Image 1 (tube, helix red, strand yellow):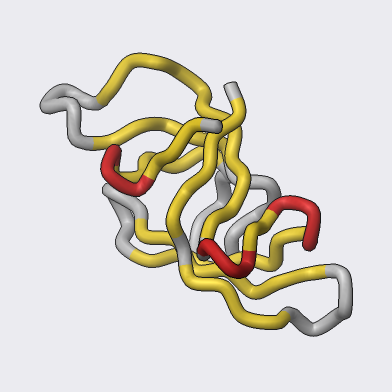
Image 2 (cartoon, one colour):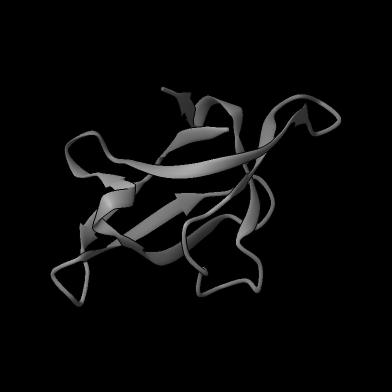
Length: 88
């Protein structure tokens, strides 16, 4: 299911991308370059794919797939705080 995650967005190195910083539940802040069609700059949102409807053991985070590889970790799948996820 497609969802949106709250993030910080700045212009990227190229005209068709943005530098994005996302808060995760497990490793803190991570950064990546996201294609322009995956962000809503004015709303500070990035499109992600929700991988499961289940939560972590205490229900505070959701597993999502990012649209690009982050710099700090080796997986595009991360847990983000539930309060930072919005559905369309």
